[in-house]
Length: 117
Image (tube, rainbow, N blue to C red):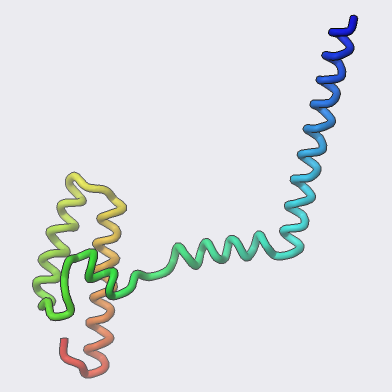
């Protein structure tokens, strides 16, 4: 008899606790949306994901210096890109591509300024 009562208390208590947790979670979501916390978190995530790499990071990825001729940069890029396409990772391949893209845009901006590259 005591075991049955104890089992009923545990089941009822578990149900009450589960409902309280769900209610608290819903309230937390409501408060977050009212305060703009959820929207701010989403915007920060998007901002982080869309940031470009720096010129220094691009040069480190490709293993080149500021004095490296553009033809050598392209050769290094092609070699690294192909190696990662065959037996590397898509992540590394995309990093190599973004590095070349960054240096390419720097080259174009320097060309527009009249600076020799």
